[in-house]
Image (cartoon, rainbow, N blue to C red; front, side, top):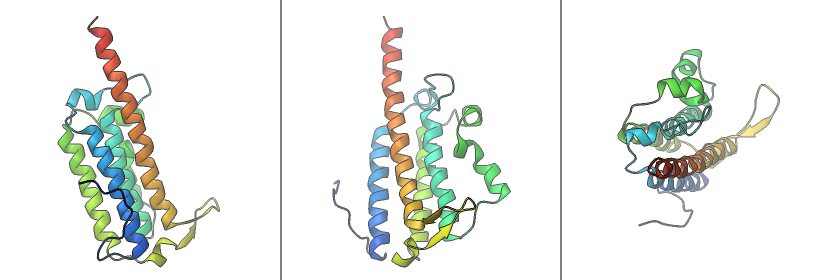
Length: 178
């Protein structure tokens, strides 16, 4: 049953648990929007330069993984990690070339593995950790709470794209059947 409350999680610091509650709700809605999609639907690219639903899903999992590294390992990704994550992280042409021909289970597994790793890492963090401040190379100050907010807002934004792509697919099918 869906719970429309932001609540702490047992075993987690108060704010950390509330953050996980928001991340989990965001993910549940995403999963509902993509359930039962076919490989063809996951690979559909509505127009030149766009991304597929599959690429967007893998991007969500990758963004979560990268931000785990940044906030829990307190470092940026290595060159090797960047090469591994690149197609899904940056999207675009490389993603269109490499992220395709996978069933929904592939993407669901990537999302689940990323989330399970997040939960394992958050179990060791405190509310003070969320508020830990750092400065990026460009001089912009941030805290880990904002970084995890970005993970959530990135998923919500791309979920909107997924909904739009699904509508465009329906319109395309309707036009083709006329």
